[in-house]
Each structure stands twice: as C-alpha cells, then as structure tokens.
Image (cartoon, rainbow, N blue to C red; front, side):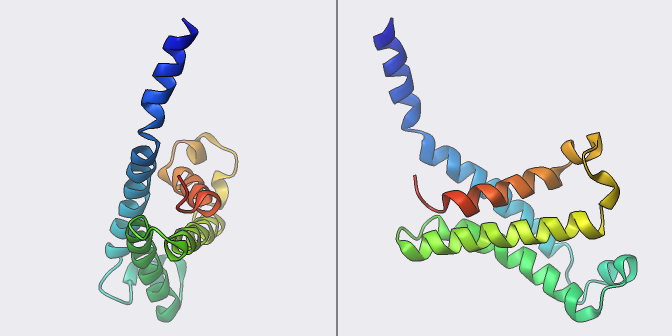
Length: 136
C-alpha cells in the first residue's frame, strides 16, 4: 500500500512545473488584460475616479501590462535572468495590489469581499512568484 502512495506521488510530482506554468499564465494574463483595458493612455477612468495625475495613471496601466508580459516570458528564460525577472514581476504585483487595496478597496480589509475577489488571489500570486522565482 505504501508503494502505491509513492507511485502516486511520483506521478504527480512530474506535473509540478506544468502547474506552476498554468498559474503563471493565469496571473500574467490577468495583469495583461487589466493593463490593456486601461488603454489608450492616459486612462481616463483612473484619472477621474481616483483623481490620479495623467502620468501616474499611465504608469499604472503600463506597469500592469508589462508585468503580465514579463511574468509569462520569464518562464521560458531558464537562467538567473529569468529567475530575477520572475521575482521582480512578483514584487511589482505585490506593490500594485497593495496600492489597489490602499486606494480603491480600503473598506475590504478582512472581509468576505476581500477573500472572494480576484485581487487577493493576484496578491498571493505575486507573493508566490516573488518567493519561488523560476525554480521548480
């Protein structure tokens, strides 16, 4: 019976890299979609709703878009550069999400709304890639 569990574990450990890739594609795609949705620059919605200056609103949109692209592309760079790019993308995701929580969703702190929103999962995704990098 113990041998069966070992075989089961070995079988699924072969898919660890694939699971990480799927998670990377989901988080990266979300950031690409969110960033692209703020184009053309400067994003009027950010300027009007949050009273952001046009430069900062544009920086947010470009940062979201490029972070998603870098997160996905860095998976295919199998050296220290890919590892650093993954960690930097993770750090940028954390910074973006903390700012989003601080500015747009202050009333969500430790509520059902926080834990049922995509934002908390994107924050956790950023933390995951910051800590894990490109290592399998």
